[in-house]
Image 1 (cartoon, rainbow, N blue to C red):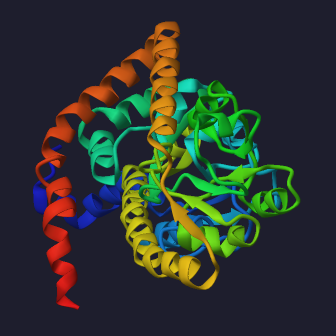
Image 2: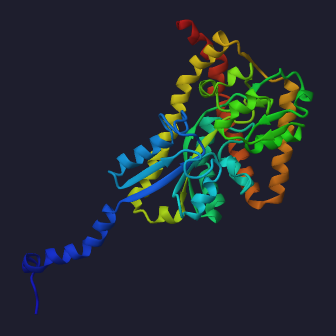
Image 3: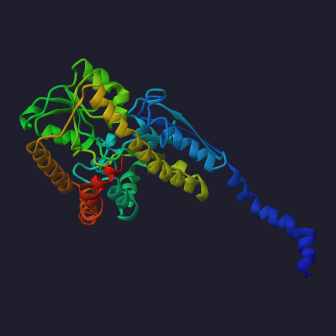
Length: 369
C-alpha cells in the first residue's frame, strides 16, 4: 500500500519525525553540573575573582550555555590542596576542571611547562600566536593526552617582573644560597646558578618572605604583588622579567567529561576561555601602571633592573637545561623546536613593529599630556 506525502505528514509523519528527533533534543537540553578547583585562595584577584578569572570563566560558561553547564568553583584548600588539581581532574572522580598554571605540573611532565611560559621566550602576542596558529595548542593537547585531560588557555599576566628581594642584587654571586620562591623551569634555572628555588602557593608567599623563610619571591606584577603586600616584606623590586615573558593560566578539563558534551557546549568552553584570555590580560595591563607608581612613590620601593652578567648567566643556564631535556624526550624536543622556530620568525616581525614603536615612536606620544 502506498502512502502519499500529504497523508504521511497528516497522520504519521509528525509523530515519526518527533520520534527520530527526540533523543537529539534531549541530548541538546541535558544539563551538566561540574566542579572546578583552583590553585588560588578564594577571592584572589585576577586568578580567582575579577575579569578573566576562574569565577569569570565559570560565569561565562553558564551564560553562554544558557545554563546547560553550571560550574561550582572551589578555591585552593576548599576541596583539595592547591597543587592537587592535575591528578584530581585526571581521575575525574571528584572534579571535572581545574584552574592553575601548567608549570605547576613539571613533576608530571617537563613538557607541560612550555604552555605557561618559557624563559627568554615570547610575549603575549607571540606566545598566543604560537598556541593558536603555530601548532602550540596541538602539542599541548598531545602532552596532556596520556593524563586524560583537555587544556584551555584562559588568562595571561603579560611580562612579569623578576620579583622582590630583601637585599640588592649586584652580581651572580648574590644568588649563591639564595632561597627564592620560583615555580617551573625558572626555578631549575635559579638552582643551576646556585640559588635554592621553592614552589609556594600564592597565599603563602608574603608570610614566608616577611619572616625570612625565603630571601626573595616572584608573584605576578605591581598590582597583584601590592595586593599580597610583598612591598612590606622586601623593597628591592627587579624588572627584566626574563623568567615569565607571557605567563598563561589554564583550565584543564577531564577528557571523559569533555567528550560527554555535545559539540555546541564544547565550543562554549573554548570560546569562554578565549574571552577570559584577552579579558584578563587587558585588565591587568590597565592596573599595573598606577600600582607601580604607587609602590615607587608612596612605599619606598626601589624598582631596578638585573645586571647584565646575571641575565647572561640565566640565559646560558636556560639554554643548557632545555637542550638537555630535549635530548632526553622526543616530545620535549618537538615542542622545544616548534617554540623557538616560531619565536625566530615572530621576532623578525616584532623587531620591526612593537619594538620600533616602543623604542622610538612611543616616547613622542608621552608629550601629549
